[in-house]
Length: 431
View 1 (tube, rainbow, N blue to C red):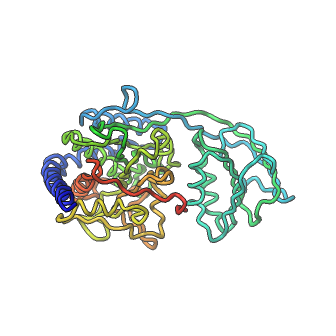
View 2: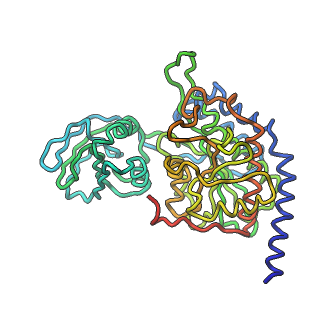
View 3: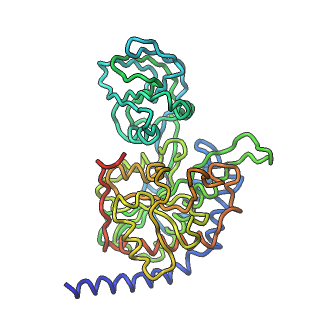
């Protein structure tokens, strides 16, 4: 037994040393800056879905994957295309517990042009009370295929109205969702709505390195390449949400990791590199992507978001969302023993970051799927450049970013090699 343990530890030490040397030669700050600068440039127009800017970004990422020497997962294409339905609301009316509803207090999320729903329609009723968090509850509902009628306490009128503005695209494979802003729980109801539906195309960018001995087991490295686009100019005449940290930094990491693992060419498990679309507008890219893999075959997911700035602990550090939900973080720390880099549990649990990025869809299927980040997201003072015109490359630290990417590569060594398998997320314990 001791001989086996010694052999395993010897393997880890030797492998980590080899990985470190290669990482130092491939993952360099100059190359990180080149990719980051291209993705966050003004001519990418803020990478908003359904724009020429995001198409240009997708083409760039696909070209980088090809240069890295990884393979397309789709039929001779790095693009994983799928449809969403764009909704133009026309009208709605309803009755709840014998009282007529105001149209402004009804939100419909459906791909049906005409909707007529009553108690007999088989909808599951969900009540979001004053002490609940609407975004967390709705994210869980949106990942399923059931039909829901949801009452939302009027204390949540601001997030309700925000959701009303955001319901412009709907993922066709999900069920219908009816939201009612009211202080009453639904006992009897009838809802009628009409809307105009237009089908549009989105695309993830996906490449793979097939595994050697464990081809049917997958390790995923991901980030989202969309952002907020262009808005009305501010006082400095800036109108572009460049999204340098959010999340060109994560996509830069995915590209660099593809180059690194392609050169290494020793992965026993199949590695999947993906740049998700439409994270900012509903997580449609990760929702579609998650349906292309049997979740029990996905061993781990490294989702990378906003790693361009120092963490609250300074350089050579990052945090892992949902750290306590699996032992994946402990595996990563073990592989980094002796280095100056440290992973920490998410210091902002009140922000519910585990549920707010592309890892959440696969995590809800039991996959050890976590987001790695350095963003300072304190409740009182959020990351100053988050979702602002000022999220530009000049605010980022390229050298530290390169070190973070190296540490992700080295910390994943035993998982990629098939030596470690993280514990699964206990789905019943998720919110």
